[in-house]
Length: 325
Image (cartoon, rainbow, N blue to C red; front, side):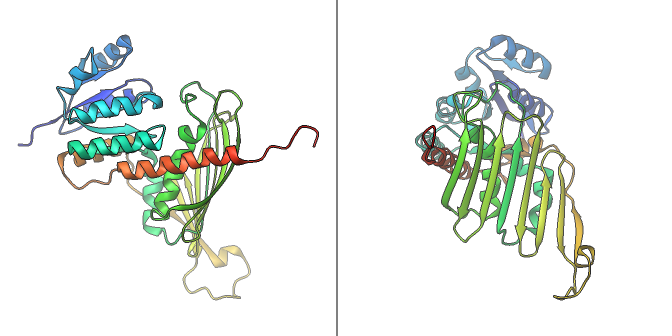
């Protein structure tokens, strides 16, 4: 009988607490403990999920084979490097790091120690995204809209790394990993020292174009992705998990039909109902065990980070007219 995989959670704030909840209930896993610099928060999570609150990260790492890391983004590199150099597999919440140099350091540490390094791009496991997988066919245009009301969490980085990176990762994924060849963007800072609203246009090798808008000062929440391709139009509501596909009816001939309904049919796309974070964590656990698993690899996390950083750089390149002109 396979022994339960001993795991831990580093950082049990708003997101890390959900990691701990899923891992505590997961078959084939033993949640050994959690660590957080806020000892009260760590103790509360440990009591809630029946594990130990460790007083140091090093002590936790000596007792586990894998961890999920959900600490503030600026700490991703240092915490991740410590975990990897202990020989512990890591699922790092997105973004992988704050710079490509830090990302490359983490990739090198994972290779040096022979352990799994995955990145928490949880939207890959969204029911709508899973439902659309079988109908993707040479996407030509991708439109992403991600809006959220203001909250202090996440404002230690620009909205591109906080929110838009989800959709940039999905765009890279649906175009098959094609590199970006042109990036244009504009954005503004409103309530934080970093960009709070950004619109980006990305052209990929092969001709596909993505238009992305993200805001963390919106009045309502919205997470939508639309994909246009020769065979039709896919609409994904990432908030509800609903997906639809508008495609030409079989047998339709150019010049026939008097209404859109006669030409196009709307198909509801479905995938099994499942919690996206639970699927992500289960895939990570499987990968650590050496089983086949569709994790978001460190290399894919780096690619999303590279594109997000380029979007931020593109905003800085936008010329600003002088006042009065």
